[in-house]
Each structure stands twice: as C-alpha cells, then as structure tokens.
Amino acid sequence: MKRFILFAVIILGLIVQQACAQSGQIIVHDPVAIEQNGKYYLYNTGEGISSWISDDLEHWTFLGKVFNEPPEWAKTQVPKFKGHIWAPDIIYRNGKYYLYYSISSFASNRSCIGVATNVTLNPDDDGYKWEDHGMVVQSVPGRDNWNAIDPNIAFDENNQPWMTFGSFWGGLKIVKLSSNMLSPAETQEWHTIAKRNRDKNLDETDPGNGAVEAPFIFKKGKYYYLFVSFDLCCRGSRSTYNVRVGRSEKITGPYYDREGVSMLEGGGTYIVGPNETFYGMGHNSVYRFKGKDYFFCHAYDKNHKGRPILVVELLDWDSKGWPTIHNK
Image (cartoon, rainbow, N blue to C red; front, top):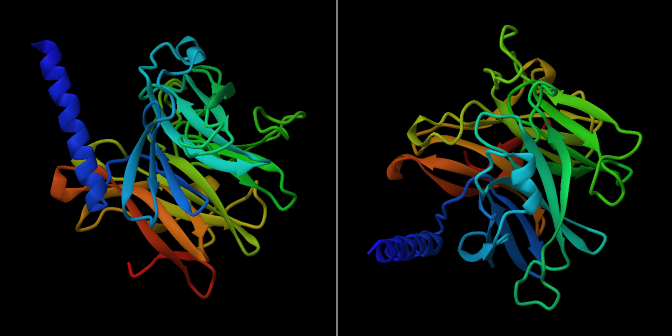
C-alpha cells in the first residue's frame, strides 16, 4: 500500500509539473538559463538540479535531473546535506558547458560550491554526460564570515573568469578563477563586493540579519552591473525577496547604486519585489538573447499560496544606463 501511495504521489507531482509547464508557470527556485543551437535551457535548485528546455522562453518542457545521485564528496564535506542542490549557474567556455552549484544546509555556512562540465546540453546528443569536478570553494563555520553558495561566473575586460557568491553573514565575495575554471587562481585574489549591516554581537556561526545574497554580474557598455537579492526567500507567503542593483567600471568594484551609495554599505537600487501578484521576487539572472536583454527570477505567487514560479521579463535601460523591468 505504501508503495502504491508513493507511486501515486510521484505521478501526481509529474502531472502538476507538466500542467504548470504547459501554462508557462513552471515551479522553480533560482533559475539560470543559456542558449544552445536555438534552444533555451534552464537550470534551477532541486534534487539533483532540475533542467528544462524551451523554444520561446515561455513554454518549458522538463528534461530531468543533472545528477541522479548527489556527488559523493558532498555529504562528506557538508554532513547535513540532504541531496537538495541549490542555486546553479551555467556558462559556456572553451568548448564546454560549466555548471556550478551549491552544497549546503539551511542557516549554516558549512557550504561548498562545486562544478560539473558537459560538451552539450541536449540529452539526445552524442557525448552528453555531466562530469563532476568536485569542490571549487568552501566556507567553514567559525573560520569564515561568509557563505559559499549562490555562485555566478563573470568575465572581466581581459576575459579573465571570476566567481561571485555569498549569502547573509559578512556579505558577497568575488574570487579570481584559474584558467580551467575549476579552482581559485594562484596567487589567490578575493574581494567583498556587497554587504548589509549585521549585528556585531552575533556569533559568526549565525547568519545574522544582513539579508543579501544571489549575486549576478552582467556587463553592459562600460559598466558591470551587480544584481543582488535583499531580504527573505523560501518562505512562501512570508517571503519578502526583492532585487537590487549597483554598478562599477571594475568587476571587483566598488559598486554604487544610482544614488551613489556603496553596496558595501547596504546600497542597491530597487528593481522589483513584492507587488499585487507576488509576495516576493528574487534570485535573478540576466541574459542577452537575440539582441534583447532578459531578466529571469522566481516569484512567490499570491494566487497559489506562495508557490515559487518562473518569471521572465524584458529588461530596459533608462537614459542614465540603469536597468528597469519592461513596462513595470
């Protein structure tokens, strides 16, 4: 009987998932996207990392998991890890796709960022196979006042790769990567690029009240734009997520909002957040597809009890070069 109930639950979940995909409202957290051969691929937080495909950025078909089993090293490095892999990022470089991902547990900074590679994103292609390369960076409670989750890869004017990441604690970091993009470069170079005020009396094992996470860097013109998420995610109807942005002429910062406030001092120009439709919106990514800039995020739907759904909007830029959501 238990097996029958489990089977029924799985089938019901697949039916709901497919119905949501057909309606354009897929259930996701932390979406990132990339284009290959005219198809769009999307990856998001989930058991093994969920993957999707689309022809038009509106209708999505579920492809399955990246990992059928979590990487073997993950449980060793993060004992409380339960198999739910967070906040991926996907990029293409030197003939390979690099998929970065977070291994952690809620409210802990015993965390790692790992990476896997593939020569194609289409499961039907010859050579399709994700090869895991293990840990790139790690944070340890009591040693590090930052959290190794929410990776994003960006390139500077010299095509040098950098990884930005972080959540709560002492804010968001950026580290220069090696040429193979599997580890920090030697000699190592690290910078803090955004943070919010944190209660100084808190123990370093406490994430604190400086709620900033999910960095994403997008280069446009002479500026690097740093998008971040403020406040609280993952709480359904109690979520207060909102997206902020600052910019800099250097990838390592300092980043300032349009009022001139440093993102090292809690600055960040408001982009989007709670409204009449959503309790909160956040963990965004930005891409240029076919000559247009797109803003991806997840949002907690007021019409469906705070269910997190995918939102994809066009991104406009005002006369001063600041991004705005199209028609919002």
